[in-house]
Image 1 (tube, rainbow over the protein chains, first blue to last red):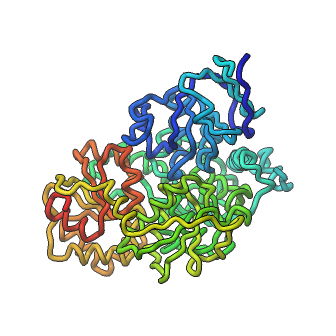
Image 2 (image 1 turned 135 degrees about the vertical axis):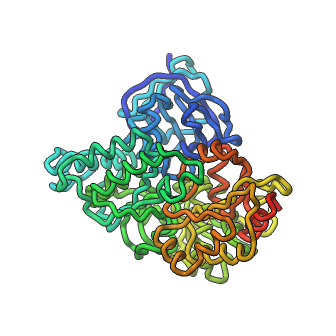
Image 3 (image 1 turned 45 degrees about the vertical axis):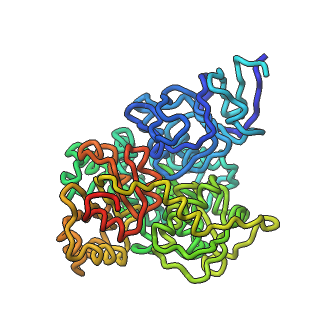
Length: 138
Length: 410
């Protein structure tokens, strides 16, 4: 029986994928080598790891406005996360997800960096505000 | 969201494809944040450097720019954040003709909308400062936090696509810092020391930003006895916004709005000499070979340009070090006229206009020039630039200049 979690209504179509989780924050400009598709900021907890086609689960957005363009640019090149899950985002991530067509949900009941584990298989339905953990029953 | 008849007309494309795209994008964002309706804005400010846009973003702009003029013209005065290229100096910085070509295309597309190419992140100092209660669609976190806090204007962070959308519709979804309820203090800090210079103001911004860690927190900073200068609050605000993604702060008696708390005031966290020293120590690299010194992020005011010129007078930048000074086109023209540019360049530094370094292909510049160790008095820049492969050091303007002359971090 999958674990079913509710969140605020999000952005984008229903997707499935595998998580990459860290209790850290996110900015496409500050944290990523968008050419290689990896986290490049040395102090980031996911430094060196690939974000391509993963469902990123992080705490919140940080820093500047560039992510609003960059998610679109990453999506067009196909070097982009499958979806984004945050505790609570700033406007830039929502704007970037809406512009780039990247799935985004936030505002769960609890800390998403504790709820989800790296390697979880998820089904995200942003329109309904529902996320299912498919490979765990608790 | 509740839509007016005009907004409904935009949504069905009756006012052309650019406005249809724009209002649809804004509704998606507005509904995500539970906005009830739209609010008219008096200005838009678009961050659209080509490093962020990429080929895909430029093509998107060109697509909208190819529509009939009456469909694509912006509805409110719309200005731009720093760009990726200063055509006068880009080759010297190791940027490529391909980058310049993409920049040329982006500029042509933005001009087709009627955008004024101000290329600045200090528009509140140089173009037109907003007034209290002014609803805006500003890009650039430093511009938003200064305008919201020091001036009492009302803007969320509007990324490039959303700021363009606001320019095309003349409005923005009413959520976040457009609403009274989000503007009350949520965190409380007490400054027990006066920051010595802009790098220390930035450090204080960084400390508070890291403690807040959220767009939705509003810090109240007590203990500021004397009004800081606009440049000091510029460095403080940009660092706060960079480290914390924070968009509004209050300093009682100094910033525009009453520093009311949402509930009973929380306990104040003290920030003094030891906290600032610890923050600066994170970036310490005394004795390291120095590659590049950057004055920017935000672009320099006229007074900062003069300070750089004074610090460089009679000195010569070490041959292995590049010193880059970034400012807005307006200030560059003033600096040219007043002889400041000549004095800075006589010492071997580069003065660039309309860029802000980190928005200018910083990774590619590092690779082209072999740059690793960077020094700056901008706390915002040291926060950003690590992800681009640099090892940054934060220090006063005077120490940055002395290090540039010596060729190593002093």
